[in-house]
Length: 380
Image 1: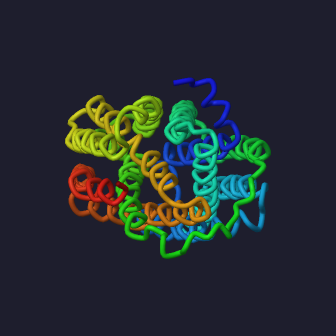
Image 2 (image 1 turned 90 degrees about the vertical axis):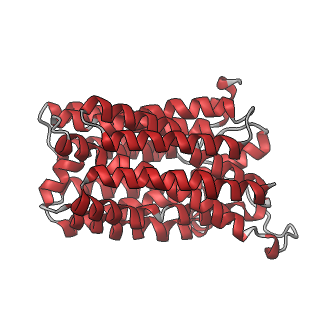
């Protein structure tokens, strides 16, 4: 593995991955104080995030059109939209204004997410190198760094508005550096639309959905689980998202090497089962330390699932249909942000956060034993 060469090839879409990772880590590391700031219950907050997820859902579906219209500026504009939405979240004092701000940030994230994954898939095809895990690893490290920095600022007594103001400036810098010369795609290559692998896209989207649900549940609820269920200190709550992000980064660097030696669907199956054990451990933990270990194991396992799924779908579809296929898989996957928040919120409100995490672990086990084998059969 020539990491230096791979980093050089990945330099162009890098700003997009870093922007998404940093933005959402800063938000979720402050989730308990933001939730209290707007006076929302678990259920109401979950429904608010559900409504906000419509922004990402619509943006991902329209991402190919955004790329055609904005060209080289599509990704920078998406990052600026994220910055504006996150700054709005810092100023929000009601659930309505928070929902609107999160919808804006989700829309920007949706566009950037599809564009960076499609761009990496294009670079993989032209270079002949596996780069998806590496780029997602850089996202995870940005996420971990953002969560740790936010936790330290919270511990020092800094309120959300100054933290989001710093994030706003950093995202503007990332947006300026994100402009990329997008190669034209020949849509008249003769591929029949009937060749579009609809069932494979749906099954792969299902895997991404459960992986995103795992990430979202840990990102969005680990801090609350540590601070409320396990009575940890405010600074300890931010360690949940940080542990997830750090171990996801390490796992993706490992996956960058393992993907060249182990069949992608086999690696996905092993990783999903590993993640299930970590989420279950975190849910049943009796101390903050054990919960952090569980979240770390979950991050290590789930880390490679989405990059491998995106790389697989980008590899098996025709070039002229790649953007559409990745967009559809992303839309299905982001369904996790549709039903995930209300699912976690309602289960937590009625049965407690412990059972909410156990339910996620059960879904991961079903994914490993049913969905991934089905994708392996279709892809081969």
